Image (cartoon, rainbow, N blue to C red):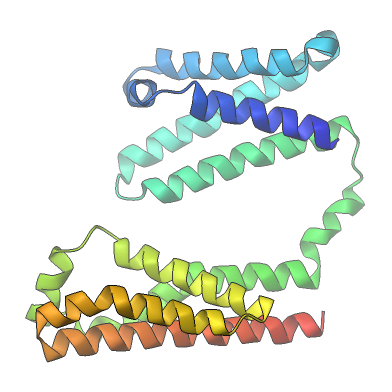
Length: 242
């Protein structure tokens, strides 16, 4: 089972990353022929994977091919409608592709549905809730918290000088790292993370020479760390009772 999964995963990586050039990615958004070409490449790679038992495996090849076409088509539509969220659509796209591969492997090896109950276990649900709180809920909470200062002229000017959504991504990643450190019991890592962020921010704060901007950065940093620590310890406490 693991060997088949790794073979299908390797075929996906080769088809989606190795053989898919940047030029093909751009062209398939405008011309369906290049999208079909991309899917055909995947089907050919699947043919190599199932070469020894091609006569019995062609339905799986067709299923994965059509699923790949549907997923990539949805991704193209979403990217055109919401061009500012490429990372989100990329992650969703790859997650759906992995789900298709797992579905095929599960069907071939007739994995009983009882095995799927692990996804409804208390531990899995606790990890899922913590992940959503860290990645989705906390940015909204922080945005609402900082809305009182959103009209500050000096802060608005600083936001225009930064990369698009860079602060959001940095905040999400740092909170994920803090939650992970708490689960591993590596509490000193939180101190190293705070120190590292302070070093990188020191230049901005020193050059800005602005009290409001300094206070904004400090409040944001401590609020982000506080939320992550609460989520981390809440998860750790919940897992003790799972």
